[in-house]
Length: 116
Image (cartoon, rainbow, N blue to C red; front, side, top):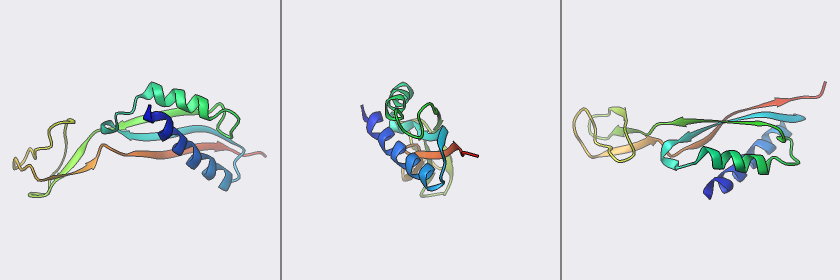
């Protein structure tokens, strides 16, 4: 279950950012996850629920947006979306492509509250 270790890293970053901003509570965590990471949303949600206990993020909402695999052709320069198995350039049929997106896990944003 690699989701638990991924969420552990996410939560460490979120807690550090919230503390640096002097926030009193994290209300929402928004992630962008590449489809090629094979992250299971339910497992991420479970890890989130466990890891937020007793933290500034307790009770926060987790939102995950998936990004599709995207590559760039090293022959003609075209950037294109594709499935997990085929990275052949649709313009020139080259196999020489570079993966640009699809394996990322980024914290897109966090929403916090402050004491008045």
